[in-house]
Image 1 (cartoon, helix red, strand yellow):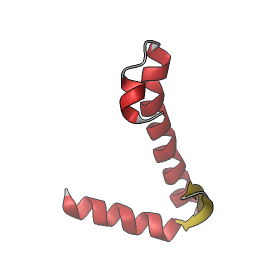
Image 2: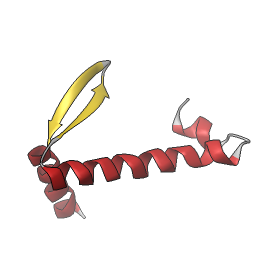
Image 3: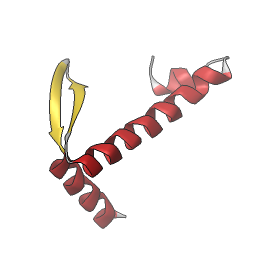
Image 4: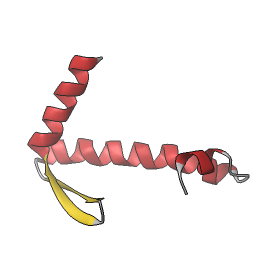
Length: 66
């Protein structure tokens, strides 16, 4: 399923799932930064480790563009 499929779902819980997943991901990033640990994600079929320092850099870059 993609985002468009989810937005057209008949079940309201399924329609809300994408937003919930995004909020959970943001909460995980915040926790990683606070605890100075790593975030483990699946990207291109492989597990990847993202350091807290990299997430901080991404936040700074995002703040500069907005």
